[in-house]
Structures are given as structure tokens and as C-alpha cells.
Amino acid sequence: MSIRTRLLTGVLLAVASLTAVACGGPAGGPPPPSNAAAPDTPADAPVDASGPAVPLVIGHRGAPGYRPEHTLASYELAARMGADYIEADVVPTKDGVLVNRHEPEIGGTTDVASHPEFANRKTSKVVDGTTMTGWFTEDFTLAELKTLHAAERLPDVRQHNTMYNNRYQVPTLQEYLDLAKRMSGELHRQVGVYIETKHPTFFRALGIDVDRMLVDELNRNGLNQPGAKVYVESFETNLKQLHDQLKVPLVQLIDSTGAPADWVAAGDKQTYADMVKPAGLAEVAKYAQAIGPDKSLIIPTDPAGNPGPPTTLVADAHHVGLKLHPYTFRDEDQFLPADLRVSPNPDDYGKAIDEDVRFFKLGVDGLFTDNTDTGIVARAEYLAQRPN
Image 1 (tube, rainbow, N blue to C red):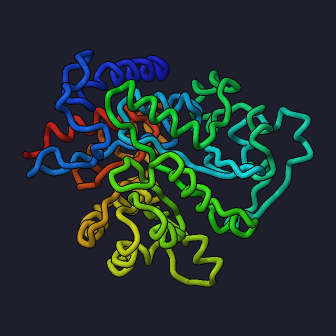
Image 2 (cartoon, one colour):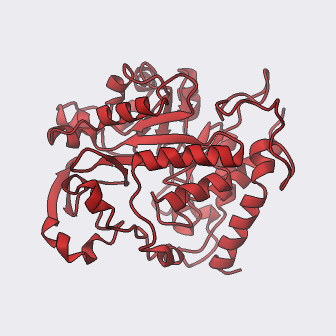
Image 3 (spheres, one colour):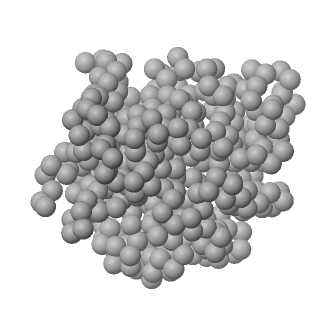
């Protein structure tokens, strides 16, 4: 089966089974009855009063396995495939509007390089110790950004996505929130939002308080309240300050190497490796409700990609009351452990469903995936196997 056929089949199957997976009814059946759970019931609520929680499927940057990341089309597809939450990264514009991009540098995710009127905006900046060269959102007004269009970030890996280049604009955070609200009504279930505050230390040095902007936007939308289906995440410990401003769950992201940028800027010698130790997790639990670790921190792999035995991170985090939402799960062979690869072509799909099931069985509380339909199928398989 070709990659394109596999993609189309996966999308159609996932959409067809959406009602069965998300609403508990047969595919194509009616919407939930009037006595169904209220729309703001958290997706990670228990199945019943005594049963275990159902792990989340989080659409990482939408559904970038099928559409360019951080576009409204990518977000909508993830929702239609059944994602419990849709993830968005936010960065600021020159005129103080939060927009959705993975990085402030947009040369690789938009067509800005083809706009001669912005040629003089190309520059180099040091972002969290890494020099980036290109075009940065904080140097553009929103009106200027809206003249650009999104492009596939991994064109060599996801060549099929390049046919959607130059078709979608860069969305604002407000447009993303509006889409989640619209999809919630259309799908008869609450589609959650999962927002990462990007590079707060870098932006703070420029005099831009991204965290304050995010808090204000959540307040304006009535989402900064207990029970709102919202997570806020960060690779930095700015979450400690957000803990005093937000009433929604916070997620400490943890990379497999390095250290939070705010620690580095302050001369703190601690690293992410210290953060995943029992004492570090206990400290995180004082201000966050979950961690988002690199998946290799749960199942390490050797240089050849062979998986080793699981670490104790799941048990250690649960011991201090933290949930785990590891990242990033992708279908292509090159992103899978060696034992689940199937082709000499690294861009072909491997046994990604098996990897998702493997992590669900270890007890993770959700996962970030570029391929929502894969996560939905894997979760259904896992739940069918799990003892009651």
C-alpha cells in the first residue's frame, strides 16, 4: 500500500470511527443523548467512579502528519480525527498579538523568503543559546504576517504535505481558540486546547511578556477557570509564576538533554536530568500537574535505535501526583525505535500503533502525536486489552 493510500485510508477510518471512540456510540450514529456528560467534562476524567482514567490523545501542532503544522486546517483535522486536545505554540508579533508558530523564526514554515518586500527583515538572533537566521514574528505586524502562507516544515519527509503549501495563513491564538469552540459544538464533545508558551526568557529580554499576553487572552475567553479544558505547558520554569496566575493545569516539558533556558540564564547548573530525579519531580509537583517528557526518558534507545528497558519515570512521577504526556509520536520509520521499523525508506510508515500501545501499557496519561488517527486506534486497542 502506498503512503498516500495509507494516509487516505487512515484519515477516512479515523473520521468514520470518531463517534464510536469519542462519544461511546456506533460510527455514524446520533449525537450523545441529552443526559450525556456536559461539554466541559475533562477528557481525562475517570471512565466511571471506580475505573481508571482514559489516556489522552493530543494532536501535536494539530495533525502535521497530514497538513502543514500550526494551521487551522491541521487543527481542524486533528479534532475531526478524535484528538482530546489540540496543541498550539504561541509567539508574539511586533504589535503584540499572539500567533501560532513552533518558533519565532518562520523561514522554514512560511513562504516569507519569497516575499521581496520582507528581504531586509532577514536577520540572525540567539534564541536560548542557539543562533537562528531568518525572519522572526516579533519583527512583523499581524497584518504583515497575514500576507504570508504556511509551508510544510519537513518537505523531504512529508512530501505529500507540500501540496498544501501556500494555502493557509498563520493563525492567531484567538483564531485557534475560536476553532476549538466551533469544533466542540460541531462534534458534540469538548475539544481541549493545549498551549505552549515559547521562549519566555528570550522574549522577556526583548521586553515582551508572552506569559502575561497568554494569561490575558485566556481571561478574555473565559478559559482561566477550574474545569476549563485547557493545559498550559513550557520547557522553562516560568510555570512557577504562571501557577499564581492561572487556574488551569500546568505541564512542565522536559527535554532529553540540556536545561531550562531560564536556569541557564540565571547561572543555575541544574539540568533536565536533575528534573526527572525523584527530588526534582517532587519540586515540579509544587507548581505543575503534569510533565511532558521526551519519550526517550521513558523508553531509552541506543545509538542504533534499539529500545532498552523502561525507566522508572512513570512510577516516579505518579508517586508525587504528576501525570505524564510524553512527546513526540510520529508514524514514519525514522522516528520509531528500530524494532518497529519496516522499510529501508525512513519516510515509510512503520509500526507506530504498536509504539503508542507500548507507552499506554506503561501507564502514561496521554501522548503527543503528529498522527491523531494512529493514537486513536492505538488507544482503542489498549483499552480493549486493559483489565477492568
